[in-house]
Length: 313
Image (cartoon, rainbow, N blue to C red):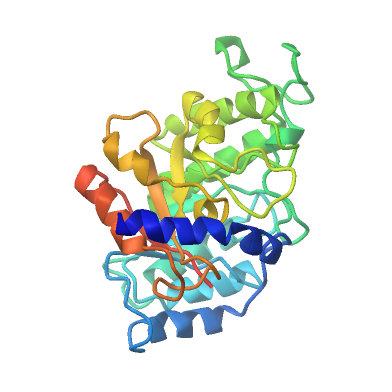
């Protein structure tokens, strides 16, 4: 009951959060973020999130280089990143910089990259994925500009650029061991398009070749984005993806996701990956009203064994 009352307070404040977070993500200096993370464990006003297992170092980064620098100085054994380059096809040298960042200061026991966003276009300009731009037209069964070499086995047509990007992803998996990939589907409207589902299925299939997992994350505060709830993510889970729960985004959208704990780990929409930030404000756990630890513990008790990643400003 206490959890439900707190969730009620959060839902009542959703209209405020939507107004506050309706624009592009705010850009912050990564050094400041790192200092905040350390202060989280020393200031009595903020409870340490001891139940978290990893830290995301991309939210607020001015550049991918800053994100990699933060990873290189991370006290966490496990880290997470958005795509840290401004191209879907980074050079060998750029990819090696990621490897070096994971190993800095601990070459015998490098940090583990637990998840990575696929290239999603220009995030600063408002892009949130490119799958609305590739694949068959709505209602069409023919090929588009590029053709997947596996089209004859049922994959939809996807662009050659995306195919090349997925080859890069496989190489990054070989370099770092990362297996979970957040796939943003693009701002093609509030209704999920057939082309997005088919392209997502093709991406998920290609990732599965090397043991990779395509994650789908409901977002908040993004206009013309079709996945803002667990229900809206369901077609993409059915297409081969796995659910990524971001506690902040779902709280901002007024969605109670604690019911998942009653379904158990065999449920088709059981989360593969969890990210947390408090609500409102998207700050560290303890800075808002969301009972994050309680929510996480409910899922743990119900069988969740995945990561719990701090992704806050």
